[in-house]
Image (cartoon, rainbow, N blue to C red):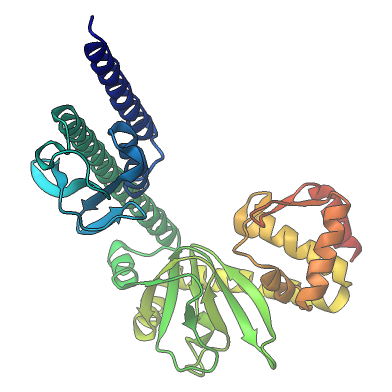
Length: 374
């Protein structure tokens, strides 16, 4: 074999090896289920030059859905090769490759094999994008179905609770015809403001608190589904006696005072249930006041943690959206004091604090003993 032919054969083998290695690296990126489209495009831009002859002076531009990604030194060049990114039969972008310096003859800047390589990469990228979009669409559909199922479950549970309050189907429709959604942190009611309606919380958690001076207040209740908010304003002064804030995204139903009063007047069984509910709420508030009046700081914090565990979450995990400030206000103390006591409880292995700031009740029996001891 002549020396020139042997050299050419070796060069061809080297070029094929570079192309295959380039495709292998790109395939590896696309096999990663966690990689996003933008991340994949940026990595492919780095890899493409490795598959071409003049790697060190090769620059790449990929345009996808009107967003441009390119090599650090990329600029408009006179001699480039462009291939289309076709997703589901529609052009979604392009891959453009060029050299920063003049190489070879103008008509032979890119070899046929190199153009085929770029076309193959474009096809692979097109398929990758299509699969990603399909997965995203499937997830959106599943999320929508899950949300609808969750919504239906919440509505079913709410209707069941209202039926237990001896409301008729017609009265339930009156109570649940006007839903309002609050984002986390939004004010649901403001102390001193005029009101003409009752709120019925169906989803989420909120807190009711008395506003004080210098941004200090008394958080006297965590409200969970299903509960009424503002019932104390139904008779007497038509103003809120407290403020309320959404601790999580909340859904409430607005019930006009006149409607609520009419149902009470016409449905004695419901009136008795509401009176029973109101007495239970008052009892809880009095118990809280007794705790504040008669217990030391440690006993108050212990009782609040048990209240959150047993009454609110019904789980040994207290979620982090109940902040240290919320716990402090429930226990009627400064945030600093509450944090110090929580730290001591953690040191004694009575509670555990996770990285996400959730509080786990590790020793409920000892916590109950601290609460009783005061």
